[in-house]
Length: 343
Image (cartoon, rainbow, N blue to C red; front, side, top):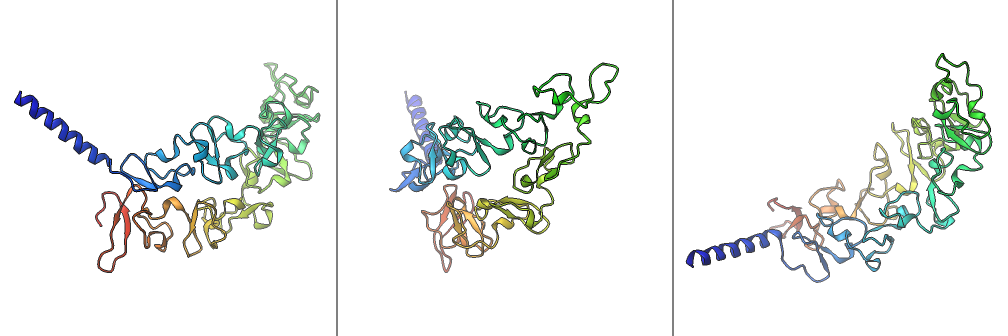
């Protein structure tokens, strides 16, 4: 009996110890319990950014939980409305962010299908029905056909590898003309080889791989050439409306909306330099040195600003859930350090 009682006490003590290690302390009012020992401000719950180390703050989100500027997926997930809603990519995982789209909702670089759906413009006239109603593959001008397709001349485009394969994919026989002599096997020359010497029409850009794209697709951030040649060696004057030139040796253009958003979009990080407080995008904070960093990196124990501004005067409530708060001591102000690091 005594042995059993001692065993019970040991089991209880072990459970208590595990509970303490798991950090089951109650979170202060106005904060969200991550369930892993971390607490975050309630306003960071269901805002798309994962602030809990275990990502619990972005799971099981009800529509009413999704913060301003986000879209409820209906599956417990929230995505950014401005960036993810109706831009041709299923960010929700259930397709909700791409349903019932209006023509005015299609994001920059997206094409409206006419059936409540948007697809990326670089999928229009690519030889595949991405819309589901065929609208992205009808009335295609030769210059609209993607670089890896062949313009049929009847409003259609077919994949370049289907040219001269012995089957009329265009419907007007255009893809089976001018194929050259057939080899002994009876099959025409391979499509890629047949198109290798392509000469592009006036107003088109030669991709160098047998494909041509409309010149207005040059340096617009989207890779329309299969080999990406249309987005290489871009001068500042080449960048299209709505884009930002990366400058220096980068010779690239990126979306202007990506400027000062806390993410490196240019190879040389120039899109994150010389930012003003007004330039900083939502969910970022201004560093005071021309840079913006994501709010979730503020008070995380690492100098993300480069001038220490994001780690200065941090309160215990501001510390990220995977950090420990160090109280002010002898001239030192309060700060946050990674868990396991001595103050």
